[in-house]
Length: 144
Image (cartoon, rainbow, N blue to C red; front, side, top):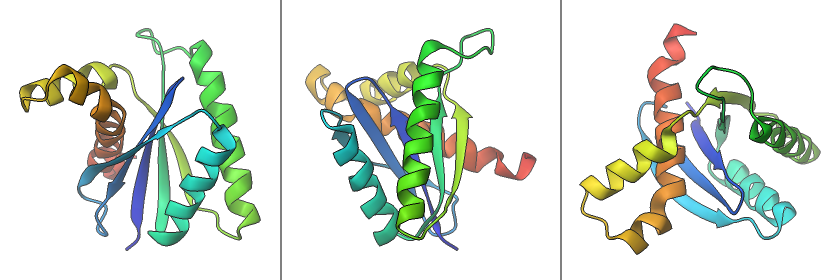
């Protein structure tokens, strides 16, 4: 089986997580700084190619009422750009938008509980949020 990639797309950073080959366990992977979105998209494409990614799960921020937010439209645009770029490289992994409500809050709590200091929490927050998004998807994919 191929791996899955989780993405937590934020205004300043993009958190990434990756699964094991059986798509059972998600691990925080890395954080990309989003100064140049095209460079970040290219970096993600390299990861997809190198790590045999078959599924990409992108966090979609919905409001507590379940409705789309302003950021939801930005995420949809990002997902489309990523899909087009991947297709130009001859690959087309499944791209799934997954409700990410409150994942950053949960990620902060997880890192604090692990004893991370405030500056280290900020350093790992986005990749931990991506891990939570991907793990929730992996835990629930049989239900879909």
